[in-house]
Length: 318
Image (cartoon, rainbow, N blue to C red; front, top):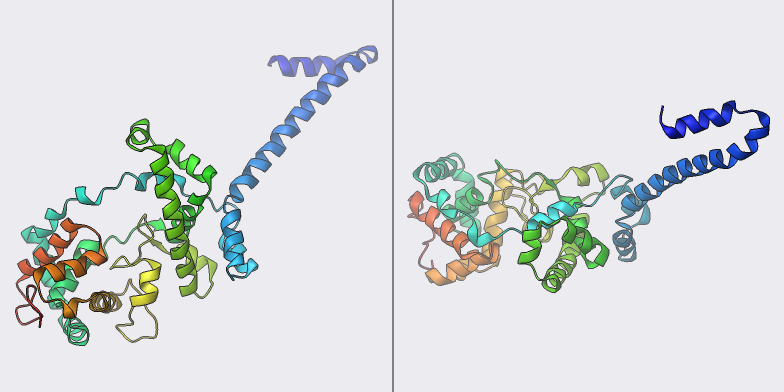
């Protein structure tokens, strides 16, 4: 028995003449217990209310209050740790040479052969080299084999909180000492504040795409930056360039046919059909992912496939 329990027992068993001196101690213990209890409840409420500024903004921008509340039920917590990890990503350091390995290029050829009729139809409709479409789907998600496991609603919502200093402080404190050393705090704040604006626009686009089924929205998963499906489109890209390739009345970027047509549509809109030189075609692909190593990998895989000689040239216009 610890000292506290001993004192309690002593008080309870004391004679009546001593009870008056025990009561203050018993009351203090009771108050301490209830203080801890209500403190825990208050802390839980604070966590649940982390999205309050975002919810207010969504309602102010036209979404119904009950719909917004359904998206953020109690226990829906920010992904601060994931946000901190995104600050370590360096696109230029990714190993794009892996996609030029003979075995990987062979996979791309097999995908091309299995989906040749679909790819030819997309190429004819949009004027985009079918091997480039295949290369993008290979590099982005290995033909849908890894589309991401991060909840899209949660990560975009958390990024959208980064206009709040308290949220940025949470992310900063989750970073390792070395990562904090690599970042100037002012630059860190500037970057995350910019991402907050970007993320809110993507969140707004995401909510505009759905039929307001909270469970369906919450179940959607993708990359740590909110990209979804085989082609890793952000919600705003899906809204603008997503295409119903299989003509079933809906756009599903986890469906290969819709993914193929969506990539083709994106490249056409961004100038593929008008691009005449190698440099111009590189610039079109660069709009898809702002990384020159990425661009080199896409065109390299497309050439190594050697299956699209009758297609739109990779180095010339039509």
